[in-house]
Image 1 (cartoon, helix red, strand yellow):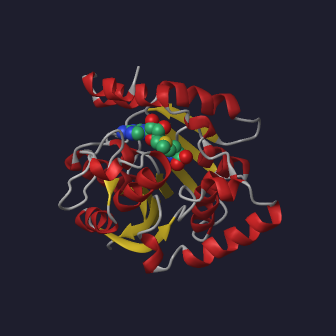
Image 2 (tube, rainbow, N blue to C red):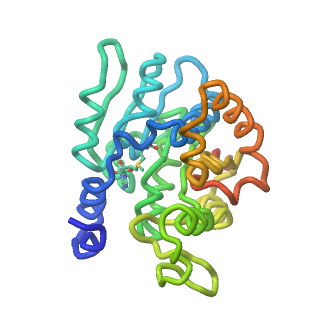
Image 3 (cartoon, rainbow, N blue to C red):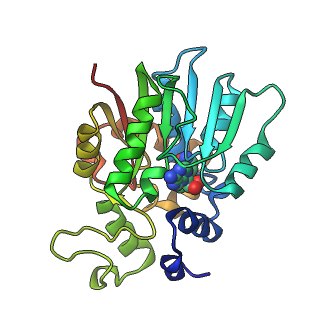
Length: 267
Ligand SMILES: C[S@@+](CC[C@H](N)C(=O)[O-])C[C@H]1O[C@@H](n2cnc3c(N)ncnc32)[C@H](O)[C@@H]1O
């Protein structure tokens, strides 16, 4: 199946599953360049993590975050829509890990009790749920299952940086095409859903959350992919340090393909 054929599929759940038959999620974070997103995100989560905390990973993919925290002794629950990904997580669970994995849809996790997790990760569903009402339903579920003093982490794909990387890395004629609105530069929400920094702020504020941190999760990594992948380990270490130094600067947010927002409840 080609990407354009996915639109012919009736349900959103089936469309998402079909998309991940095209994109291999299990290797997405495996290069030096793509690892920047994972390492930056882990670092942000660990600022709030204390021993004994319970973590819910919604849209867990093939388990990068769930497995990392379970390996480090945390009690983790992973919920993931795509059956293939659920099975890939289960295959990687090691003895002694406290990691439960369920197939489910983040917009309805009614089997999960209210206020039951200290940390809730939502890295994926907001890339895919096409209707804003459904994205808000998903965020309201994240809020419901998070403890009152818990922290919620949301990942978004940046509308504006996607225009840069599409044009500079994949399709030099992108700006002449019709996959975005030529007046306001809003990219069509397919095959992923794209947000500007202000869209992310509005979505979380309209959902009744306080934003604690706004982070450029991967910054220039996709644009500079080849150069970063060819760095020596020592240069990469220094590059990461520079990225960590920049990633919370407001002026850096617009030039990141992935945006990480950390939020808490308004009490
Ligand atoms: C790009 S992957 C990210 C995986 C992982 N969270 C990470 O950050 O590496 C997005 C994941 O979200 C999952 N997903 C999308 N919509 C979902 C939904 N409504 N409920 C649960 N999972 C969903 C997809 O199946 C996919 O595995």
